[in-house]
Length: 316
Ligand code: NAD
Image (tube, rainbow, N blue to C red; front, side, top):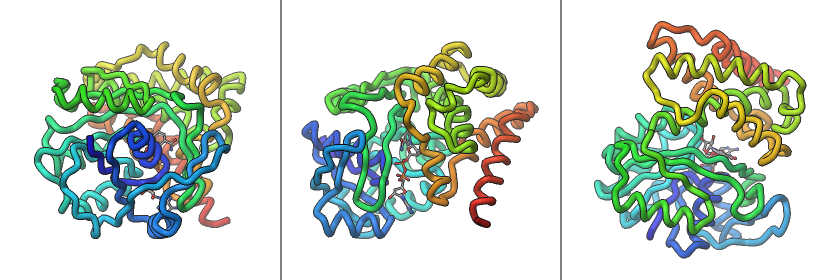
């Protein structure tokens, strides 16, 4: 199968490199100039596994404007939410009506933007419970042993077709441990809620997931945020794939067992003075609640706190 990965950052590289190593043809499109130049100059990307075994993986990388290939079976989108609209416009010349789209970006907002360019029956979206760090231009670190992490995905139409199963099979071969569901909103919102707790609190307090989980009152904080988020989702008629208790268990499992040493991706953005995705995570829950005349006070407060932290960094 042929994949074009749009967004060769941490996750785009992880998906693209592992799909390539599983026998697929993969090309990358990216717009961050120092990164693209570095990869072109060194003939690929330096990949580490859990900070070790740094080695060069040859990759084909292009700027959006120079990429003209329209023969990919699947376009894979891994950008930060606020980069997507601009990137879609810059890339639209290589989209075709037959192509499938796969994404596992965090937060919500991307689905509507992708649907401006692709048919609903071509859209596969999900969530990735795995940690990856872009150390700098041309350097990526896949956290966890091979086979670490899981992902959930669903068709926008909630009707898997033959191509869906082929994509899932390639993801399985590449060791992403995919689970296909037929609940689109519930699947995506489970990760939004997860991130609204762990990403946001770890970022604000500059701690790893394990340090958060070790705090005596962590469950109390998590439960307050999960409950408010689920109250929003219930009002919006979203059937969640986890119960509230299962969502808390997922927060605890990932923080204590799967990735205790990891700083979430929102923290990585904050520490590099990049804008965070908080408006698409806690902020998304706030906006969704307001549509149904419900004020998610705690999520609104946290969204503002993250923006205050971003603002504070600019003055340091
Ligand atoms: P990323 O920031 O590594 O890369 C996204 C894009 O930003 C790429 O095009 C990259 O080249 C560019 N970029 C990276 N650093 C930059 C800089 N300093 N200046 C300008 N551009 C820069 O993002 P990611 O971690 O791959 O995340 C993509 C999506 O996947 C997001 O929605 C994220 O929340 C989600 N996600 C990330 C992880 C993770 O562990 N990294 C895990 C699950 C989901």
